[in-house]
Length: 350
Image (cartoon, rainbow, N blue to C red; front, side, top):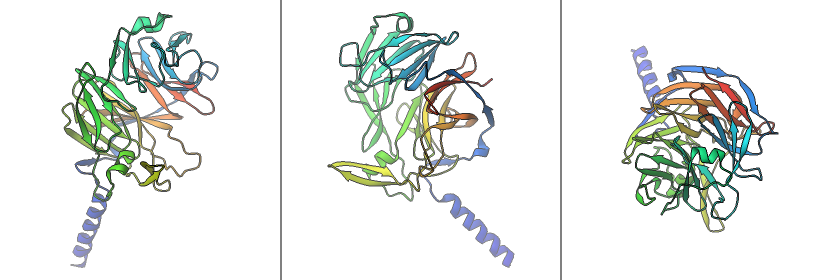
């Protein structure tokens, strides 16, 4: 009888442990659920003599294009992947008609290059060959969003999705002319976090990516949570893992600005820079405490998920990176590293 009682108590305690820190509708997963782990070793593709301060990069056919905020010859630097030769800098910094102040790659297209200036909320589309070869670069189309987006923008089948800095919804859907259609993606609810709308807005900071046609993945940066939505705003899956931690934030009020900040001794970094690859998406993973010595948000893991939310592969990198791009034709990953200097690394993932 005593053994039976001990067993029942053990089951009860285990059950209580597994249900703490739960989000609504979450599916919990662990490192052991990943089907494959690959360790990758880097080589230096471009060093500090070739780049300034790149913060992002993309592969377009046989060209690598960096978003580099440190140079004087344009925001975007174009390199030939085969020769490593720099072709030139593109898009000058400024307020002029062909200049930009805060550009970002628009996610979701390889047929042409789309750049979104966050400052003006204007999307600029360029023919790929002209972006690479032309000295006097002009977009073939510009679209202004009628509601300002924030941080991320993705092209979808019939319009755009942008991130919002909003107290209620995280995403906005636009039509092809930039007119907002509806807002969606409420902030997650957690059984133990009674956060108000101001704290939630900062605690659930995220980056997102779409497969362009049917699904959107929201990858949160201060909790290891991934939400997968459909294009109508319906939550399809909520993945919590692999370390199952939550965001610890407190509200701050400074100069009439309402916001929140992480509690360093309790907080960890999670997901950054998700990217679409057709049948699957990738995202960098950090998982380290904000309180560790010399902490930063660079990552040494790239995780691969199916669009159904199945964890497939973990690429374990030998260096910490801040951004990356897959060259799927040649089975290579190009990544931005910052230690000891800014450089572009190359990984072979065959």
